[in-house]
Length: 409
Image (cartoon, rainbow, N blue to C red; front, side, top):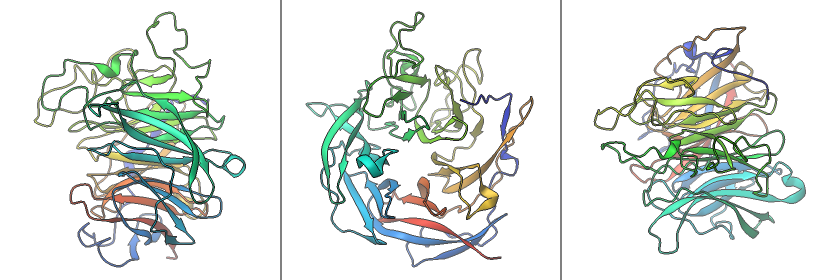
């Protein structure tokens, strides 16, 4: 892994937003009407083109080698776009999910060697036997182009809770083929009430962690808490802890860095550089308050706990995260694109290397696509376009997956 800490890198939020020059479009009028829509930003003009429409609570997408597209819907359906057309029939063979609150069918991701093994990975919320509690799980199976066969669960988080929130569920493979999974704190601390539990600080469970596994679910022997002499209680899958609800995850194959965006409470969304064995502080340190204004954190920093590389106050409900490496938008190359749900926006964060010192600027507003819709996921297509998954959890209307295409100036 190429080392990078707050003392050696800057995510330059100084001019972070891909500034919107075109007249803003409200979510009520944007994807509810016909596209495409044209925008002008600081570096690139682009159009937003619908790719698949009429989706119900979409969450994630993945690209097949032939150009087709897999999309998850939280109710438990895996959809496929074949030759540019959304198949009305869901893909068969998906796991049973706990569809309530923030839970359901979450991420879809292909194995790095999918062309050879046809393995598809799905994260999801699952119920216990009497359906009184739920947790986060990951399964994989073989996709034959029509259905998933041989589905097997390879990970079940020790994060059981009756709460319908903070499942995490983001997946990423690093350059060495290790699988990373995010698990939220599962709402262990009631919103608006006193925080008497610090589940995300307890290494004997998976609440508020990012875990690292082999592609078949086995535990790597070099994970940081395997046989750790100072933490005999620690679960060996854990890679990092002290998270609230990581909703974006990106593995940079060129540098070995793992990036994650994390939902804060009221204020204090975070972008973190994830390093093995590190404690990211939730709920002991942070920048937010309860959804009523009462304090949560003991401080904003503490020795032995990692501070975010970037944070958002007020919150944008940070969601999808993409390290753009394509050629279609050259001014965005090797920069992070961060989506927002309630913020309904994208921020562009250039990664700037320094010999020493840190300068993290506050984000400019308004940001790209302000008001276009709740951006649930951001992905780079094989041709270099940027794809967005839009959801509408509040009103429950069907929403699209759209594509950003460059336009000549």
